[in-house]
Image (cartoon, rainbow, N blue to C red; front, side, top):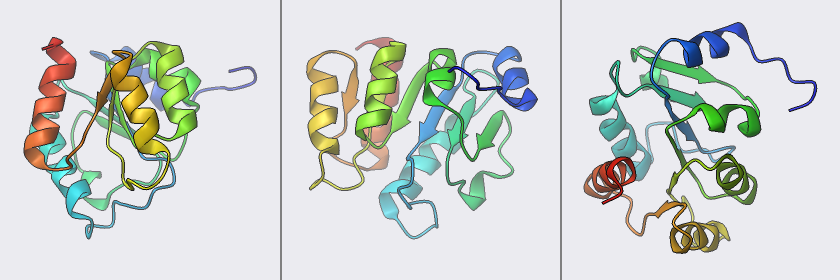
Length: 154
């Protein structure tokens, strides 16, 4: 984006290995250790993070992620800059994040934190248009299936 200067650690992260997975839930507060679906997602990601499965987190940082290898977490960075560098995105399904993923042509796994908001509608649209996966359940098994599916197109 015009006028944006990415921090050196972000540029170094992108240059230092395979494209990362981006995890962002914007301002949704779910990383305090008390939200079961968010903890299940972190459990799955923690088991996958490696030299071949790097993680870029944007927004509120879960305390348990601080020591993960192959992970960079930033308070914020423009989606328009970050998403094109990513393998896929796991996000909350908000309008702006969904649009940025579609514009970047990067597939998304949408985990709606609240089913009564418009996030579910955006997620269903993404899935109908083959731009990603909208999860109907938020549990470890569903996360594992979605991550496998988005990487293999199965």
